[in-house]
Each structure stands twice: as C-alpha cells, then as structure tokens.
Length: 202
Image: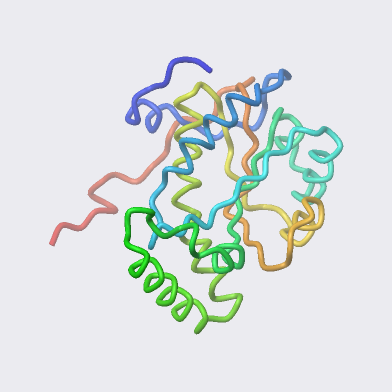
C-alpha cells in the first residue's frame, strides 16, 4: 500500500468509483484496511461488524447477479461485504468485556448485556447492530482511501441472495457491498450541502 494520507486528505479526495484497474489487491493491503476499520467505536464495545472479503471471480459474478447486474462488482478486484452479526455477539458477550475489569465486574457486565439484548427480538437486535456497523463502514471507506484504493459503497443488492452466496444465516444484516481496487476512471466531484444547510448550532 502507498503511504497513508491524513484523515482530512482521505475525506476530501474520496469519490465513489465504478470502474477499476484490472489488477489484484494484495491480501496484506486488505487486511490492513480492515485492521483500521475494526478500530471504529461501538456501544459497549460490542463490535458487531464482520467483513467478508470476496476475490474469487466466480463468487464475484454471483454477487454481481445479486446486485442486479451492476458492473462495478466484477470490475473491482475485491468486494467487501460489511455485515453485522448480533446473534454471534450475544452468544459471545464475554469476548467484548474489557480485560481490565475485575472478574466480578465482567460477570455483571455480561449479565446486564444479556438481559438488555434478551428483551429484544432477533430483528431488533439486528437493526441495533446494523446502526453500529455503519460506523465501521465509514472507517473502512476512509482507511481504503488513505491507503490509495478507491471504493463504492452499495446498497442496491438482494440480501437474501448475498447471504446464500456467502453461506450466512438469515439474521445477518448488511451495511453495504463495497467494491474496492485502484480506480480506472475518476469519480464525480463532490456535490454536498453547505455547512449552513445541515448544521444547527443551539
């Protein structure tokens, strides 16, 4: 990977790209991007995000079909499915409790979390985890840009088909499908609301 940009540079230079250079993304580069994305904050540090990295051409072709034929899916050398799996989180709550806590505090924390999420339906837990996972999605996009890669976050796909392709259970939610690679064309320049249109200081 190239030398990282500052966060500001990554924010200002990132554009969605839909055509990529036909060269593979090295596994180590993808691992480092995910290593940075996993540092995103989450309530109670539950970290419900899971990253499914697809580079196999046949599987990417299936994902393209699930994404209604959108060409960027197979144009990109890799596709990252950013998912949330709250049922896995709830089944392994001890893994998210900070190791610096006393054993008594750890047990108390696990009991409180189990009671909180036990009062939700699977769907409610899924939506809660998805909101947290969207934070990690933002981190992922900036980490990729900072490392010299382009991305395009996509929501236009059939989640049922994607779960089937990846062999995932029905409760898994997706924050986005993210084709990633080196850009072959420039994205459109930013067209954003001004600060005065979206920020209200009270």
